[in-house]
Image (cartoon, rainbow, N blue to C red; front, side):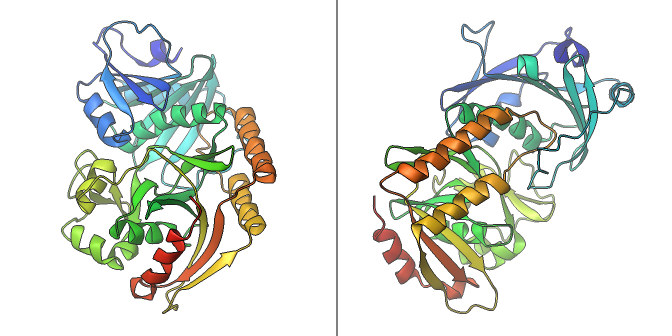
Length: 381
């Protein structure tokens, strides 16, 4: 099993329980500061508490973390196993940062070697819902990967509650919630950051989960890092000032913000420091769907209403064809499919759907805030 295969049980493991919207994720690590790292990466809307002894209620998932003596020998051993066939029904992870190699499955444990931007091995044991992350002795934990493993459990538990992943930015501005939906480089994060600079709150810069319930479309945060391009920072007066002194390798993920792999990377505490207030939301109603079209040639925005049936079709198309999945993790695809079907059924029967708009804009100066503010003020609550 994953635990006996990978962790030296003679060493003392420290434990924490992560509570996120009713789901319990247990984390075991060979380092005392893992709880602090988790609290930083997962934000204020999850509770990270030390565990002492056996808990009365079983966790939804267990994540194990540790440095491994003899890491290279372990890797050779795993590489010798029969390679696992690629899953045809899993799309590549849209973030694209975590290059990895599937090493195969043995005794019910799926093994994956990570290559860039960090070196490590993840072992996934579906029967016990456990994920084990190992790295060479002397190396440090790669915090975004630890966050990703814990988030995996939270996301799957969300599917079981009828929630669906959406690749979008989610903000609440002037008391109304908006999902900003579009493909890469459409301007989702840029528009969200402009709204934050004017007082908005952020539920997710690139992903969240939604669920239709009665007459509302509800959104729920999935903790993850906010990644912002240089171009977005340069074109945002607030960010350009706040991040002016952040250079390559200037900090760690646990301190932040930092510039890494071509983008500024910030967890919730760093976002709060940048905007000088608490910006993270755990949940909200979605009153509008906004489809951005960023074009540097645009010098004056064009904000155009979109018929609700067209906007909902775009939302459902994004859910089906732009799924934020990591193809090296095992997913409960049947439950996800059921959640997606529930959302589609809700869009056909709900008496009230979010209002929909397309926003074509360019540099910051192209935005007409009087029109944007009036549009948000006019949304149905």
